Image 1 (cartoon, rainbow over the protein chains, first blue to last red):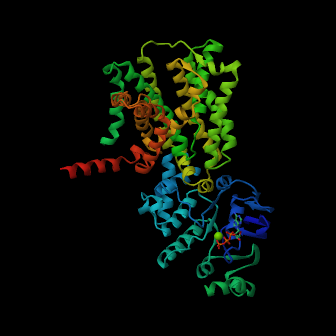
Image 2: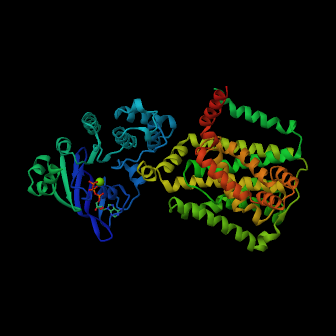
Length: 240
Length: 335
Ligand SMILES: Nc1ncnc2c1ncn2[C@@H]1O[C@H](COP(=O)(O)OP(=O)(O)OP(=O)(O)O)[C@@H](O)[C@H]1O
Ligand SMILES: [Mg+2]
């Protein structure tokens, strides 16, 4: 069954179609990778799905309901959580308080919120850093804090925007492990990632964007051997 | 442990203060301090904790004050009802205002509050049928002694501090801080930022309106320029917040104390010292300069803001450790 469905979604910025006529579905329990060169419109697509922008044309459905134009806080309550490519920690709050603030959406008491937050911090290996101000965390941990905060809202669908960018190899493995564990919890994941090896190994399916348009969709194997993709994306990535 | 006891020791000292210090003058100043604790706590909630800086607190203060005054002149009620209804009318002003203006972010909201301040003052000036315009409102005070006013002010100050404390320890507090730190992150965490900004503003407006009603009761006279004053109320509220420590629980209490003292220092020209010295010097220029200084307390305020931001960006309470370190170092160096 499809948890997320995009139906010919368009997002224009003035004359630029940052997202152009994109349709695809994400099924329950899947990890779907969203890839494409810089400026392809991946983050913009997240903003359309997550309600920061309403689509200029087309529609977005979540769990069977049309959600085009709904606000992010409502979508969060409905079970959609996201992380930001450019991390947005609540800087002057500790890691724990960052996550408690997030957990309140599923908690009636402060004690319950803290319980959920502690669990999310342990899950993302941040528990030892719980009392550190989030602005003092190194980038790798701030990326994980984004994930912890998203998990604390107990989502059905998790949108991850380049959670692996800027990580060192050991952090990378740690994060891949965390993503696997999230999937085991039954949370569906749509993930933007430039790291080809990572995306190929963790995704069940991959959607490729280029200049705002979907140019391919398929299993990692199919995508790896698709000439369009190789030309638009892989070739470029290999040069870089 | 010691830190936790400070508020209780301060409260005990404040409870016995008017019994020890019988001077009307100092009791008067302390009543003002306590009133500013209420206003400062309110400003701190919306600006310090929620990050929505208000430049127009006088709009709510004046509304509360006028509500108390008009209850007497129009309805013949006691002005003390204003403590309740003044809070309500301030909220009634705050709700449509916030509903519209919280769609704007950052500096726009601050500018809108400034405009609200001016609009309210003009309304109070022009709508003579209701407000008596520039004539203002004069009522007979209930008590001749300052004691009752003192203890009522103390009670309101304590209530404000407790309210803010309870709010900040609840979900609302977390939501206000989240909004201050990052609105997009807050939205994505399931926080209806518009809604919670409104709640913060409504609480702040209610407290500020109550303070206005208290002012009417205590002073017995208000006019548009006094209670809707941009510099004496709105800017002063910001100063109380900044000097004490933005986003700290007891910052506004400390800030109120310092700022009332500073305001008084300017108003009286260093308690008359400046003009005495100027007269003693016999120089015309120095005498007129001293008069200028006395009148220019607004400028003095401005300088104080700059000094505070430069040296104590987190206010006296927020930078307390820094201050004690500096003082201790000096002592050690001085031997
Ligand atoms: N708010 C905006 N206003 C105008 N143009 C925008 C806005 N946001 C993004 N764009 C443009 O839309 C296009 C897609 O940007 P987007 O950030 O979605 O790309 P991306 O695929 O996430 O890229 P990256 O891999 O670098 O993160 C870019 O050309 C970008 O400049
Ligand atoms: Mg992006």
